Image 1 (spheres, helix red, strand yellow):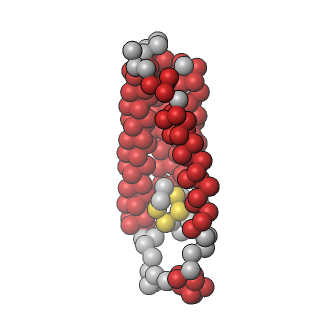
Image 2 (image 1 turned 180 degrees about the vertical axis):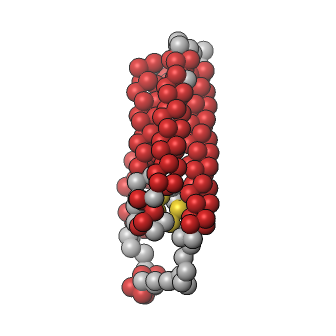
Length: 168
C-alpha cells in the first residue's frame, strides 16, 4: 500500500510543480493569469518576479517531498494513510494557490506601475454558430446510458454476492 501511495503522491507533486513551472511561461500574453504585453517578457522586473515564483515553488516542492515521509511510515493503518494523503493534498493545493495569487498580485502591481493596462475598450467576440445551435444538444442524451449501466455493475455484484456481507 505504501508503494501505491508513494506513486500517487509523486505524480500529484510532479504535476503541481510542472503546472506551476508552466504558469510563468508567456501564454497568449498571460503570465500567472495576468494579461501582460509582449515587451513584459523582456522586462527585468518581470523576470525577477518569475524567478522568485520559481524559487518558491521549488521550496514548496521540497517541503512536500519531505512531508511524504510521515504518510509512508504509517504502516498498515489504511484510514490514517488515507487521511494523511488527503491532508497532504489539501495543503499542497493551498500552498500552490497562495503562491500563485501572491506572485500574480505582484505582476498585477507591476502592470499598473509600468502603465501596461489596456488603453482601449475590451473587444467582445460572439460565435453565432453556437448560439444558433443552442437549442440542440451536441451529443444525444442516450450516450449517457452505457456509462450508467457500467457503473451499476459493481453495485449489482455487491448486492447479489451475500457472502461478502459478513462484517464479523
